[in-house]
Amino acid sequence: MIPDYEFSFYFVMVTSIIAIFWLEALFPLERDNWDFEHLGRNFIIWLLAFITADYLIAYYWIDIQSIIRQQSFGLFYWFSLPADWMLLVIGVLLVDLSDYLYHRLSHHSRLLWRLHAVHHTDTQLDVSTTLRAHPLELVTSNFWKFGFALLFGVPIWIIGFRELLIFPLSFLQHANVALPTWLEKAGATLFITPSIHKLHHSIIRKERDNNYGEGLILWDKLFRSFLQPDSARPDTYGVENCTDEKYQTLDGMIMTPLTIFRPPTPS
Image 1 (cartoon, rainbow, N blue to C red):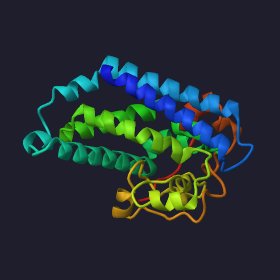
Image 2: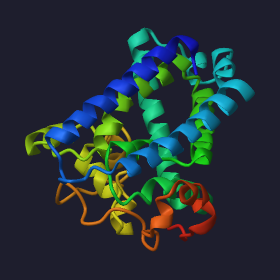
Image 3: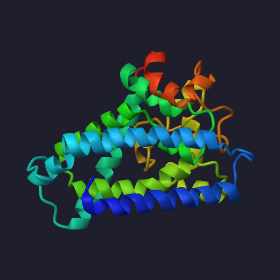
Image 4: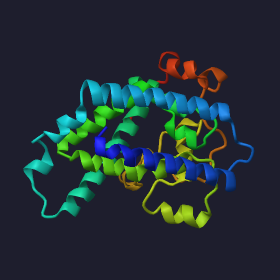
């Protein structure tokens, strides 16, 4: 993690979680949805993933950020842009596209699905679902993102800036919050809104294998993976044949890649 970026990272993350908790309490989509054991499990697996992927591997072992800082390769180095704002806009778009492509691939690759399924086996969506990820998925997604950055020459500060932008939206997408219809419609002109993303968490696969965008709605519209939700949430969250309690425990989440299988479909 970039040293002078750490404060902003933790500040945005913590304030986003506090704000979403407050919204969940005031405007719940589903009432009586508080489950502190569920919150704790999702936070612990995120902590394990964060320590493994971001610190032990990406920061201390390989130091990916230093590699990107020292690079002299990629489109941004070969073709200079006339203004910094253009670099920022194009860079953020490329990182957002990178996340879309990786997310879509993780639903259509047998190996990546085994890792990503940990996020989707959550049968009770709230702000903590945002954090729910297998440690190895965070490792692979980091390598993908930074490989994409190296290929295109995206500066490390743009990756960090885009992460700060996406934090509040990502927490809101998973939150147990009922947004006004007008706000959902207005937001959906540019972004993946909560109802759009919640459909992606449906237990019905033909609904789940859509709406891969994490920030902008552009990529789902452009690559024909957008599915309009009919309601604020699907009838049931989760993954078929994976609704047992064992998939909700900490050790069950860690072992999910070894216990789950689903043949991919063509992307």
